[in-house]
Image (cartoon, rainbow, N blue to C red; front, side):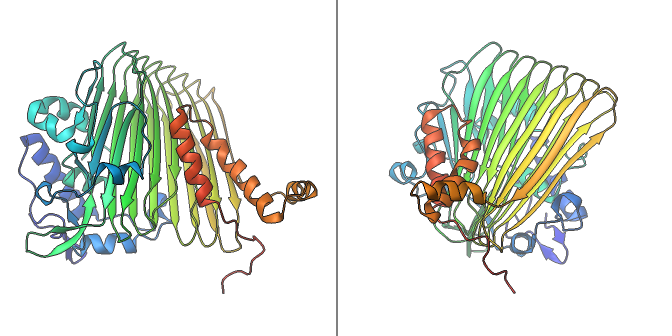
Length: 458
C-alpha cells in the first residue's frame, strides 16, 4: 500500500504494509499508515511541536531518503565497538542494532530470573497473544498518536519485551542498548539509503514487583540517521519501576523517543532522562496515574550545544485520586543550541487529593543560546496541591569571583559551576557504573564553556 503524503510517498520506508505477523499487527500497521496519510506529521502549528523545525527530519522521510533495516543486511557491529560506547552494568543486556535484536551481542536474555527478557520479534513467533496485550498501538484510541508515533506502529519489527511476574524483585538492571549505524540499507529498487530505526519496546511489571530498566541510545558513524523509538511501560498494583534513558547519539543523528507509562494503584515509577547528542533530539514522557496512591518522579538533563536542538515534552495525567507526581529538569544550553521544556500536569475531575510539583531550571552559557520553557497546570478538580516554576539564568558572578579568589582561573571556575549544576541530575542515579559513565559523558560535553557576554548573531 503506497501512501501519499503532501505530494510525496513513503516508498523509501515501506512500499507496502508488512503483511507478516498476526492479523492484529497487520491491521495496526495499516491503520497507522492511514493515520499518517490522513493527518501527516506534526508542524509548528501543533502546540506540542511549535518550537521544533521538523523540515530537516520530515522531508527526507517522505522523500524516501531513509529505509527500514533488514535482517539480511547484517549489522556489522562488534563487541569491542560496543564496549567503547556503553557501560557494562552486569545484568541482562539486549542489544538492538538499527532497531533489530542482535543475538550475538546480547546476554542474559530469556526467563532464567523468572522474568521474561527477550525481543518482540521472537515473542511474535512464540506467543503473539502476549505481544498483542502489550503492543498498545493506540490507533483510534488516543488523540496524541501523532505522525511519528504512528510511523513507529507501522514500521516496528522488534524491540524489547520484558515481563516481570508478581512479587519478583530483580536486583540487577536490565540494559537495553539501541545502536544506530550509518551503514546503508539495500532498497527494494536496488538502491541504497541510510537506515531508519523504529524499535518498539514493552515493559510490564506485575503486582508488587520491582525492576530497573536502562535504555542507552548510541550511534556509530557521523552520517545522518533517524531513530523513532517507543517504550510502553505498564505497572500493576504496588509495582516499582525505575527507568533511565541516556541519549548520546552522534551530532548528525535525528532522534525521537517516547516513554508511555500507565500506573495502577500504589505503584511507583521514577525516570531519569539524559539528552546529550543528536542534531535534533526529542524525548517525550507521558504518564497516566490510573490508580489511587500512585506516585511518579520524573527528572532529566538536556545539554544542547553547537546547533543542536533538544526537545523535552512531559505530560503527567492525574486520573485517579490521591496520587503524587514531581517533575524536575535541568537544561544547560551552550553556543547556538536550542533547548525546549514543555511540561504539563493535568488533573482530571476524578483526581482529587493530587499533590504535584514541576520545576525547570536552565543555565544559558552563550549569547546565542536559546531556551523555551513552558511549565503548565490544567486543574479540573478541587482539593489539590499543585506548584510549578521555571528559571533561566547565567552562571553566578559572585560564585565565579569566590572561586577565583581561591586561585582558580575563570575558565576552570565556570566549568566547575556548570558541571555542578548538571551533576545534580546525574547524582540521582544509584547504579555506580552507570552514574560514572553519565558523569564522564556530561563532563566531556561541558569541557568548553562559552562566554555568555559573547556578541549575538546578526
